[in-house]
Length: 203
Image (cartoon, rainbow, N blue to C red; front, side):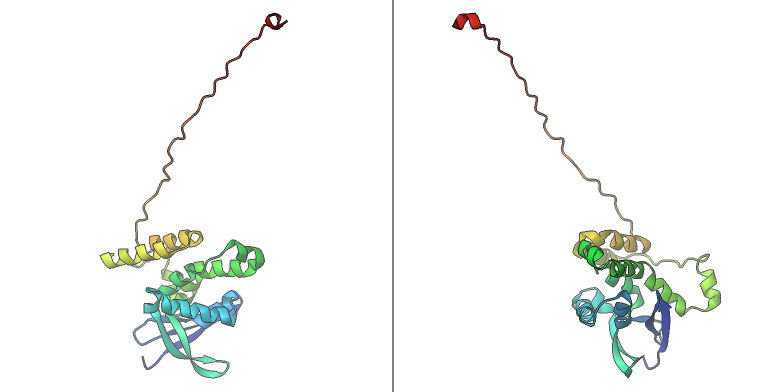
């Protein structure tokens, strides 16, 4: 990858950094996305470590020289297709909603919209206008796809499960409907017998 087409993409009052390589693959700068969400430097570093340790996400990571305030520097990036999966694994916990509601709200918007915004930045204007009327044909799913999807679902925290299932459904997976089975609780009937006492017997 000798040359990169690098762009700063405005999103929610900040700028995301993205690059497209010679093969047409779009990469998102993780550092800029973490900053846009509102994560600290320590939290951003932790996210990079989690991506590298994750069985699936680690396959979509790479380092590229991107322009920063300190000049061209090696920056960790993630393939655009992996961005929703990464963001879905950042849990919006009740504590986060209570103590940092703005961060929770921004994270939710990133989970829903960041990938599409970055992708649109590299599309010609004519193609951007036609994307809604000409959907992209999806490839056939393989056994490996289902194995990866099952692993993602199993590793997902309960509060993030709806997001992960939503992304999988958009990718062409049929999400089975699971109904909770409840056994009927045994009913107990309490009968009370009334006893009448004749006080004359005791007087």
